[in-house]
Image 1 (cartoon, rainbow, N blue to C red):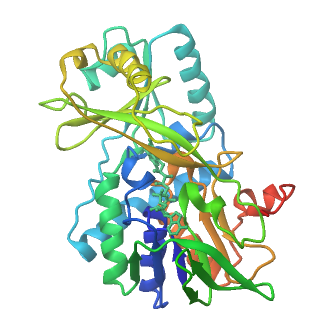
Image 2 (image 1 turned 180 degrees about the vertical axis):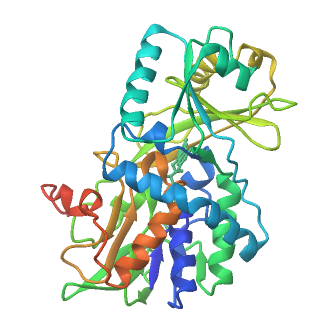
Length: 369
Ligand SMILES: Cc1cc2nc3c(=O)[nH]c(=O)nc-3n(C[C@H](O)[C@H](O)[C@H](O)COP(=O)(O)OP(=O)(O)OC[C@H]3O[C@@H](n4cnc5c(N)ncnc54)[C@H](O)[C@@H]3O)c2cc1C
């Protein structure tokens, strides 16, 4: 089995396949876990991310349910504590429009029986005294958690190798080789042919650039800038969202503030405008942050798709070709379920309903030339 890409998605798949006894080779162009999987904020937030009940919300919820055990397994396999935290998340509002947004979210989520609580501004400040006095109301999602994605990426890489997968860093795949409607391997950009019984596309934002694929894979980068402020002692326990920003407290005292959403191709840069767009909403949520040292800034590329849903499962025409890409804002959260889905897909188990996530939903797109 050959996996292209060594982010959390590729490494989670390689780990899972190797644990199942499948001979697995992962090829990574750079170092594993240094792209989107490193840049992310690590929120595991189905109730913030989904806008309605449906297959996407169900997928997010299922993966979230897998996470505590996933983190425990990684600890025992690698000795790495991946920073899984279960204090929950708050979605806070400051303006009249925010309050309406919160109301609407509370309406559909409570009607669907999801774990959401409605709080007054005073109740929100009781839970998190660092919130601005102007907070007018909040939703609490006790089951929306977080993980340290950088630790997770490292642990997944190590766990994949421990389970028996081979990882080759510094190897870029140029082309997927298809013969007689079957994927038979890849060719690297250095011209080496590597044969494989099946190929998994886990190349994140770059999946669409691979040659030889039978269909266009419409994944494109969505740039996100973040900063980290130091708050000692930590200002928050919950992950705090407003409609304009999120604040993610890490155990080491850093508070991650994110993130911009920009369509600027593959350009990665932290810009004054980007930082400015984060600081205003961060101070609106917590004015005391005005004095917090700014200790880090970075950015990354989310693998976006036209409908913001991931592309998961087998190719409809080419045997042995499987997709695990386009995770956009939720690839950290979706790593455990993606590994399960690809293991099932490779094993020929078609019992899971994947229509909403299949590549063929984009079948009107022209194949790559
Ligand atoms: C600012 C920001 C904040 C985010 N916050 C969250 C969050 O809070 N929660 C959450 O769940 N998700 C979040 N995400 C999304 C999440 O980071 C991504 O969805 C996830 O990391 C995608 O994982 P991946 O393995 O597909 O991609 P990547 O981590 O980008 O890995 C893809 C890998 O493939 C390699 N590759 C590409 N092409 C080739 C090739 N031809 N040959 C060999 N290797 C190749 C690349 O070098 C790269 O290492 C965030 C993302 C960003 C940018």
